[in-house]
Image (tube, rainbow, N blue to C red; front, top):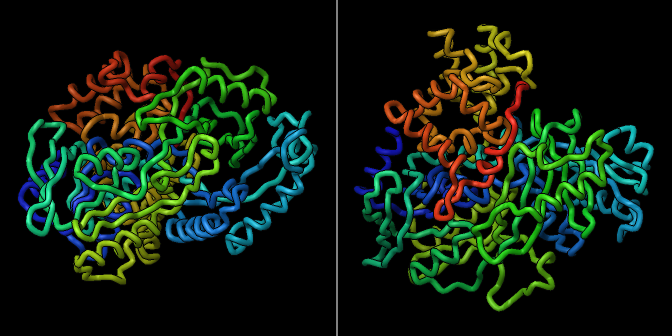
Length: 562
């Protein structure tokens, strides 16, 4: 807790150029961009970083091929370019993956028509990925025997990208980058409103861990609260031209359905697109796209029936998937930017997925509406430009604030790893060499892990049974990742709670040692807090959906990777 406590103290004492409220992908990218260019930034979130929409995505980085049906070609072109930029900038983390889409008889478009669309999609992405190809039903079956092709009339294969670890981890790395550049960030700090004072903002905040309230001063207030942006604007008296509509998306995590590393895509009975996504030793299936009126939402019986019914119709499984196969769930809302006075229920599925940034120059206030993980680098640059219009100095405007460390650092890490024979320590069940995983997850800080292993070989031991987390990684997390509650580690810095059954975790001696490393003398309290939330959710403080589902899931006995 030393890093967080230090930052709480700095929030109290310092005056900032920009205070960002909300640590999802928009707020995290904005913080990294501003801090990287020399702006004095503070970032707060009322929960953990990436604790809402940004941890419930499909873990895909895509150009939005489905938006072509609504003829939003400008958005598709922009997202394709953004996807390509992320693949180039984060080659270890954001990687190309093939999508195999099957079209059933009676669908509104012939598969060859859609295949032609994938060529347009490929061209709009500058031919950056592998070329599309058409597949007859027999070829689909040969590629993926699990697909039921009796009603299929054909399909096609094309490329997008995916996040090798998980979405919340990707978001936190932007927070960590902002911290590296001198930003002040703290999770579990809630904004209770703000007022104008002189030429700046005074925001009253509450430390959810200690209960204290105090004030944070900044010249510019940036609302990046995601689904709660409208509520925060109302709290600080901001009138805006946009508001949010909410689309609920859910995924179910089940045992691995196929050994291939491709995404299987289908159109559900109601015409909506849904996926079968590889997730290590697990498979993620979804998503829904259901309009809801509030950002507070949960997985319902109807959601589960919809996903299970549709997937069982389209896969040839020895035993159909049932509720007993659900290991965890993901449930969040997509906040869609809507112009005030526009868009009703009838055209909900045709709503644009573009983000909108509004600047109130008179009061030095910025609001972000909507947004997609794929477009995060653009959001960061656009926020820098908006802040400049408000008179904030940007000392290093040309600094490249994103991307993996330089190639020289990468070569040095892998050279040292080879000399140490690090990959000989890789678990037999691992999906990749240990050196590759450590570099992707920690970048230049992976060199510190090598040094710890050299000094004490025990630091290379697996700590939590059935996982790939080493003892030295927990020490790194304790120092650098602001893990405040156990769920921050199990769900967001990693995806352990999405793939390991709750009872297996509860019985793990390694998890107790991990708690001791992460929380010191608070270890037992944090352990008990987490499992109490799983076992006894209340109406006033419901357990996160993934915890509620895990409580009823059977423990897994297989080794897992993430």
